[in-house]
Image (tube, rainbow, N blue to C red; front, side, top):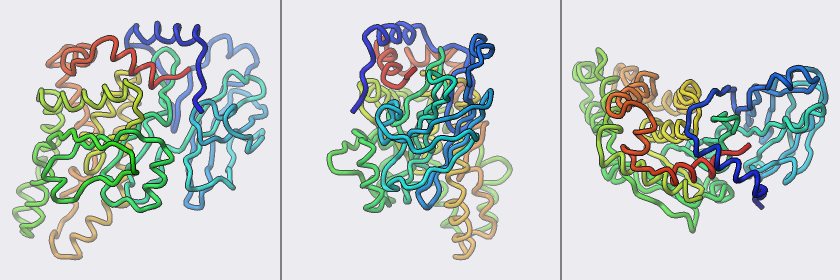
Length: 388
């Protein structure tokens, strides 16, 4: 069940969203909350911030936050991301600033609302960033970040991920509970032929929107297959690996055909489709797609960069296994040469934003001219993805 806004609230929100994307924001870990007003700072009300949710392998979820003053906090859990206090059930009451919630169905995705007794209207919604797909470690929710005008990016609306080719039956069942309408696959034909199609629940549309990775994936395979440590060092050392991804990120902005693919996905989201987009590792093309969406919603650059760099955390275990396997198999003597390609760096994302500045002057013309998104589409995108 999705809660309806009142007509007045919706109209006010539409008017706000139509104004643009520039506004002061406050980013926090794991989720986001509006910066406390001067009135709330002096009114004796409790203001929650730095809310975070961390899921454990046993299905429990640790919630933590900071509070401007001591007081009781009621915790509600729901499988509906819209106002868990109304759609779910109370799972804890505490005067501490953290609590571990147990006994929830681990097969479902849970959202939590923290409601301070001294400021019920200052409730904060939070959920684990990762969505718990065992065979897609970089799959995560794009929601929870603070956006423009004190609004917050909705949970449960848009997801980003690495390839879904190895999903287990349990993963597919979990993905089905998320209500994903469309999986937008950004991988090229070379990647599909090598690794296979995404696995999705029955009834979920797969939208093929291939975007070039600058030949990085193919070059990576060729370098590894050579088994020659000298050739591998020559191909990837001295900043050459980093340059591959800097150039690829610039091409996301320069290339009209690639811009059109990114725009297709945004239009689907604006039309209300719950969407998951992915590439092979969920970090480069998927990273830029995420950055474009969050920036269009008014999320500040520092938070956009934070989300981008999270791929290093979510991919670390898999990347470590990959490098160990290559060394064990005798394919690479120095698999650390792959680090710039297996992870992400701030300079990669900066290269794309720098190209936007160079080609369009600022981000709004890039959205409207570069991606061909008109004012109505951008307003719909913000209405679909932002909440009070």
